[in-house]
Length: 200
Image (tube, rainbow, N blue to C red; front, side, top):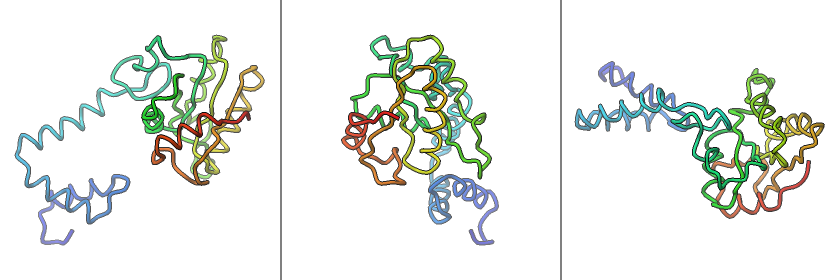
């Protein structure tokens, strides 16, 4: 923003611009919009940000985001806990849940292997996944990472750890373009990918 703008407004726009997918022009529009809001609405907005950051945590079972110790999916007795769908992020859980077809449970890695970026296995929630497998109830793990170099490397790494444990490991049969992102896939594509998954 130009030098003639008030410094707090410039800082606000820069904060918006630091969010993924928000360019400086969009950030400036958002900053100016905040200035047009009623003070109560701004306070509610700020409170929602703080509440989300302070009250949302990782589920102690699947590592998905929740405000409870155990998320609603893991605590649902109707879900098939013998099938775990492993995903990169909580956004991917939301994508699969929109299909209303998957009846198993999830495990969120919170990232993908990328040695170039310093993301090694110890930075992912792999240990937590292995501890879930140890109870002997899990029959299949579906690797639902994105079809990218990092996604494939992560799927192969996790499969290599699980196969010696006698667990069936499958990979989604992607009807997605290579390099596609699960979050943006439509429900039918995700359902077909899930239905036609392949053994690894």
